[in-house]
Length: 130
Image 1 (cartoon, rainbow, N blue to C red):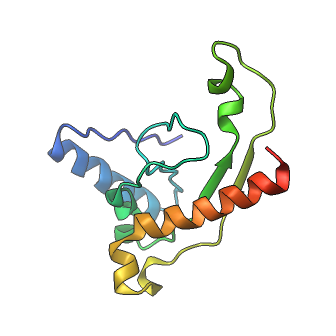
Image 2 (image 1 turned 180 degrees about the vertical axis):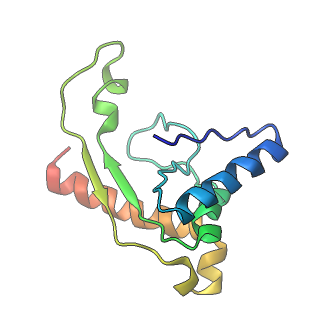
């Protein structure tokens, strides 16, 4: 599945991973990145997005597709140690073409995308009553 693991402690190895990601997207392979960098333990909140997580899309010249995931904690985290059947909603938003964005928005792309995902999250939460 073309997994890439980022070594945050080794800048040189981290750069190699990013360059590998750029090559993959240039060759038509989609990459899913979770820009919070870790699982969030607080429902209905978002950790700050790491701005560097968007470098692969920027350098590869591909759009960012905001992905909103609702109720994933309902499978496991909300009732440890059991796994429970539940509804999880995954919504793929409209593509964001980085080169078409205003320079200020590009500089704060993580905040911009986080806002889009947050708005969609609460819209879906209301729609699905989860």
